Image (cartoon, rainbow, N blue to C red):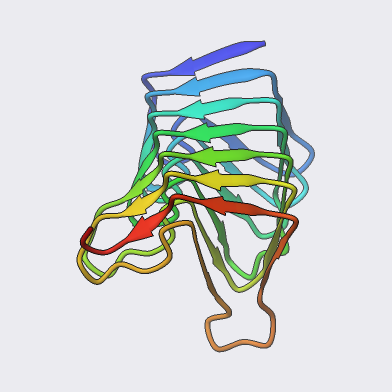
Amino acid sequence: DCLLTGNAANSGGGAYALPGAVVRDCLIVGNEARIAGGGALIHAGAWIQDCSIASNTALHGGGVELYEAGMATDCLIEDNTASTMGGGVVFYSGTTGLMLNCVIRNNTVTNIGGNGGGGSIQFAGTVSNCWISGNRVTATNGNGGGVFMSNQGGSVSGRLVNVVLNGNWAGER
């Protein structure tokens, strides 16, 4: 059990987990990353579990960035803000990351051209058995209020499996 609050970094404002690390049973709130993972940046081979991740900010991945094959399970990700993509979570850098049994709600992306209020899956990644609701992209030309997926011109793409998307929006309302 831990509390990570009021921290700032280039990436992984609250926690920066390298391969083999496990972040478990934590409250990660009120942190800032200038680039990625306002609450936490989880690398391939690292894992975040049973955490509440709230009110964090970053350029992308306001709550969490799953980098390459990072994993998140049984987390509540809410009220986070990103400027460009992934208000709640971003899967990034050719990722094959996994998010399982999470609630992603009330997150925001703010910049013009921003995408993925709840989450942005860049290249690949799987979201399974999750509830994604009340997320938003506030710019008039924003995309993917709940989830935005892009394979960046490659051959892989994101997957949603048994996911509920409810009350998300992008653009002017």
